[in-house]
Image (cartoon, rainbow, N blue to C red; front, side, top):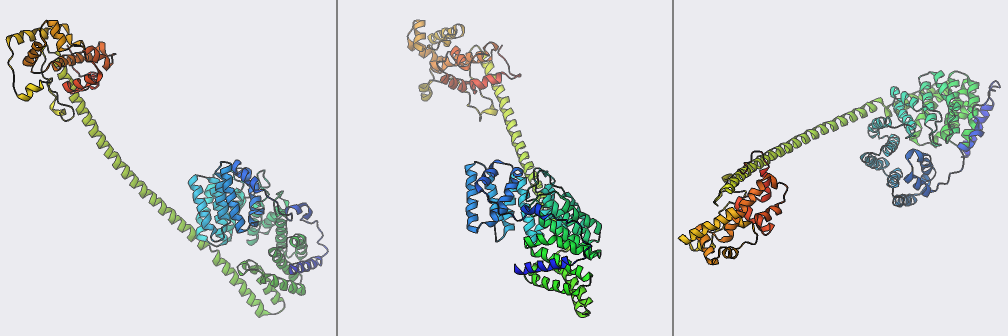
Length: 614
């Protein structure tokens, strides 16, 4: 840095040789801001940072996060960065919070060297999917900054439009980076010559030292500097001076504050040169020397030296002007070629004017042509047409996305409509079959009620329309041996007399309601042999005794189920009152005889069109 120090001393010599009338108070108070520029690197405890990431909001943790990235992350080696990311992920498990995991993903993309924009795109996609607005804004701001530096303009502008929309959703208290984001986007628009968008964004960033401003938030000072630069470019020097002086009057205590003061003073010197106030300009450049010397910034040095050269040339001091020109040449040789154009736009005019003063017209003309060429190169690089094309492509992409969404919505509506129609048809069929079944059940209940009302047992058929749905009603079981043999015995006179007595006892005495009733019990009550009872039932009823008894019991159950007085009784109680031994045999015999279960029979008895027993 010996060359730079030499140039500073040379610039100091030029400044001191300025007119004695430049004796006003200094505009930069360097001692008051020393700690804001050249302090030793801050030591950051990563474990504390991880704990605060897990337990605090983004706004509460912002100061510490800035310090962590500025003072620690940027100084880590690639291997140390991998270890740092792993430690952050472990902190997520330790503190049972997903926020350190999310920050670890951001840190990995932030430190990506190959393609940081693509890496941060993944972080952005995940944040948008989670609905994490603050990480969405952070990730997109990183993409905007890097894409601008790398001149990925077609990536840049779609993100800018989305960022501006999302910034309206947050307050500066919740997202203190808001003013900085406005400034940076405004600076991009300014470089592209879109002043109508740039200026309002700069003004949104103007906010002097609010309570939520962090030590690393220089958005307010940068916005003032950019506004001053814009008004100087359109030759509104009073407005430009006002904004540059407002930097010096700002109460912002932020990192590198003296640098912003020095930049403002140098720009005030440029304004003085344009006003032909050369001594005032040299005095202002002299004010910036301590800060520029301490910071050792080549950009500031070149800017200040070119201004000093213009002031010296304005005073007619060609010797000092030539010395400054040689110094600038030396500094620019150390600049990368991509970083020279901005300074060449000011340096070439100085060279052209110098050679014009010395009578070297060919050199003056050549440097004038070089000035036009550099301006044209910058114009092509930051063309408004590029901006318009990027926005047009973004508009077309959004339109295509909307059309795809519309088509998807239409297909979804068609699919849902088809499903709804199918469901409606299916439901209609189910309702139709259900109602048909219910009608058939009610008809079956009606026939069973009529059958149960008869004094003598007889067969009850099942309606044709539900034969496939319910077991066919059959007569009570016949004697299997006689049925199998095909023989039908003719009742004797004794059988007829005996059967008349049995029927009387069944109808009048309801002996079937006794669950313990058997052929043997009935034979003893009648005082005859069990063989006579069995023969009379088989020959007169063509069925065995149990089937004959169960028919009466089913009829009794039907009467009980249809009576309002029995509405509160359970099916098991009905079975016991009708003479059945158990629930299982009751359900089996009742369903086989009537075609309905006792429960379905009672349910259909509740219908308003059911015929009740008389």
